[in-house]
Length: 79
Image (cartoon, rainbow, N blue to C red; front, side):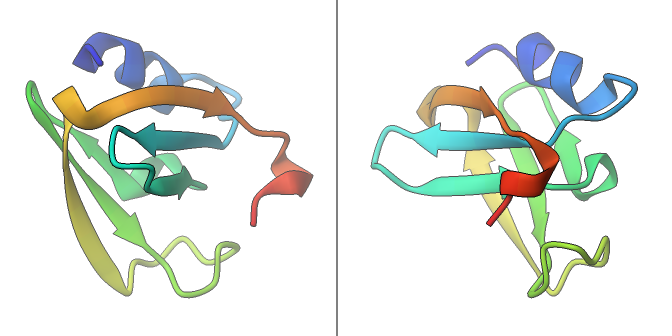
């Protein structure tokens, strides 16, 4: 997926949480824009243990070529 498309969601105001579905079937929810750092070919996503918490407990690196789908989420439906 192009980095510009992901950036559009990360930088949107008001921010709407979104889900990334990868080519291997893995799913990551982006619940806070400050937890997502988008590069040209990779993004780093901070993963909080509590989705309501904007502090990362771990970080995953995701190659953008493996992002198959970006799905906007209703804030109340974030798991």
